[in-house]
Length: 411
Image: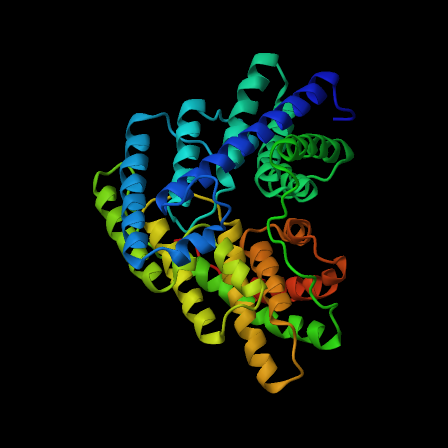
């Protein structure tokens, strides 16, 4: 494609606006579920971390049991009664159509369950709804295959931009993970859709910084050295989590037995949340602690193990959701612990900045989007671009180690 047609440009602007509206509705729905689940009035301006920490252990357990019931019944019924779900990547790459009604229900289940404490992420839901809407629009307007592919990928990116307030990172995400191309026309298309989505969201909800943090100290030589030294540990963390996930038993999600699996899995998550409430939700609560150095090494170690187990249990239960913020939490805690050990033996590094680097690297390597992760984390937090040096050093070294580790062999 040499130039974007006027029809495609209009479609990108329209779908970008639709993604923005979708992001607004889903954000408000998420916050409503969170407030109701933990007994706070809807106008209470409290973070989810404060809500779960101040709630009783028994209430957390009961909310997670409710979540498990919804996961089990909701997705079993969806798989048995609705049209088969089609992922965004499949729709973009192979041209398969995403069923609108099933996708909408699927996305709403994700938002409600994350609000109730599912440890997975919320960002897939707006991406899927936006892409499904783009699919319908493309078919009604007679866009050709190439234009349809671009529109769906950019709609997915716009959905990400809408919930995280990251127009540039979302555009990079669409190019790096879906379009797999960096042509000028595709870059322009992604920027149009993602920029429009964020413009709509900011008009309604304001320019919300997802992680309002004090500026980290500018990295020095010792911090850069730490970034290189932490890379093998982060690579092993990504590799180990992937191996753990691969070994989970595969239970057909249409089977009624999945309801009981979901209830038991979320009961165990509830027991973990009895002691580590920050594992509830997508991981933002844990990130706030590690980025602000607001925990000790023992709490960090326990929180890492609990979140790791909770994610595996949620996957076993058949829950759906994103992996962006959960990956950040795992990587941030691994890096925080690495910084704790480093500071015992060598000149100290800022542990919050270390957690930030670890979150970025684990996200980039684990989700196969290293460039997106570099842009995403700085845009998300408005931290200094000076962090790009240790980020690039750690990410590059982690990728080298990760690729040297054994991979699962085909049977």
